[in-house]
Length: 250
Image (cartoon, rainbow, N blue to C red):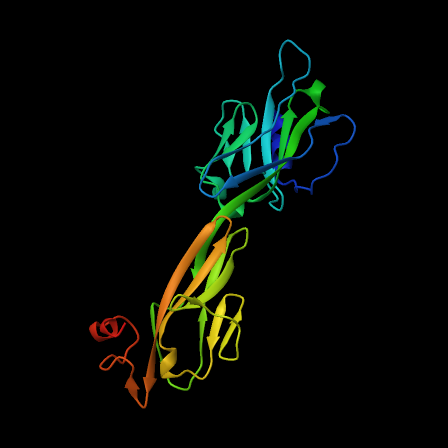
């Protein structure tokens, strides 16, 4: 028991190394590659190969994620598992040593290592497990968007920023009143941002950013209001936001 406690403390502070070939004396499968969609459940497979004996020894199942210094999941016998807070309520043991992750997230993507450690003295050098790479595909979502209504002065410039996240990385394009905008001195697009220079009354209207990938799309629209000679393009509405006269001017 003392030996197990000492070993348990040692593995808690062990650092997970990058994927590497297994040396002599160990049994490892070839790395696996698994793909899941955000929000779905996924199983990372890990086999337990017992020594040829009538009474298989007790063992500890550990799952590491590359880049995280301590195991994200540890299970021994009938004791409750130790689960990293990032996986709490989502990670459970499947079969003997496989890891089930529910509600997969984009940040779950990466390399995972399974280790199955036999605890009895005579099986000290008996190790098995596997490496698994998890890819989590996610539809585009916006992490930053301009306001729904934006009021600017005639002759000024404005930058509308749409920042999108997803896997694979989405492409952001801009439309004005449903027509795609190309890069011109008037309209400059850079990494999801649209800059409009020398704004005139003719520039008022609806601007839409669209983030697309093979996983789907996300759309956000902003209505640009233009002030000229101290008078708003929507008379009586001088504060950016929603108001009856602004809505009437759409």
